[in-house]
Length: 429
Image (cartoon, rainbow, N blue to C red; front, side):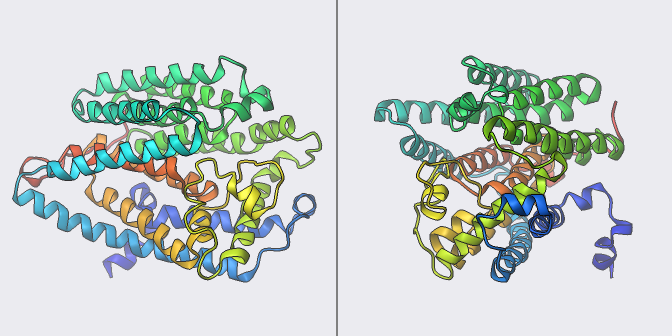
């Protein structure tokens, strides 16, 4: 009776809505509804004329994926309970060999992503990957020094933001935007900017944190990729709500800014990229959902039930493979395909199950295990990134981010005595 009551919207608070088994399916369903509506809006349908209406099977597979994610989130929370009880009874910290394994995976996946994306000598690839793994390890050694971590994250984000802007402002120029789309500088800006935004709201409050967060979001907009700015704002909002640092009214203000980015800013980007763009800003979100889901529909036709590319899609760091192997473009383009698109293209239904298992267990474990403000920040980043992947699709760069967050998350161990750190219960200024 208690669990039924807790799932009733009348009795749910912000923490309940931000549980991954509630928020992630809700965002996914909004995306699916937007894709469905897109084909019933005349001006949007005209711009999607190259695609047939999505099949019922595509919607059924997507809804099945949502159900699987919910189930695996619950499994992840059960794994967390077992894991926490085991280390609480022994050393109160994650076994070193497990942390070394995750760090090795970070180095390996980063090396693979660089090898598949950039033509560079092996020594340089290993050097960059090793440098990134070393940086993650250094951060894990200074989890208590939030001042240094916040300042460092802001500084690194700003440096890499200007590295992407030095040859032109991507928001104003389509060529510059294409040039920086898959550069390490943009990826590092994205990661450290959202890291900084959550730390700012968690440890510095609204008066000192929000101006810096807005500055980072403006840098994200200048980069020409709306997902950067949205991730910065949404991750800070989620962390702020979970830690009682911001109110629901203030989060509504964040959502208004996000909607502005998804409509007006996105339309501006489309106008500089395509000479014949005619869709009004208010319909942009429906067009994007309709286009992305149409790509997934094409994937379903190619790969249902047992797969088609068997690993090539998940290894495509730019996801340009969607344009050449699915849409038959002559010139490769970065194409979004939904969260389960790459897995479906590679391994069919089993790829959907694997993606749902990875995402579900990961988020369930983090949500169940988080105790401190720092861990809540990491969870907010992971949840926000998963929201973005609902459109973009799981890829190697995302796996690197997930592994990095997990390493930092587990480096803190279990609080002394097994008792969680008491989180704030009121909104802080």
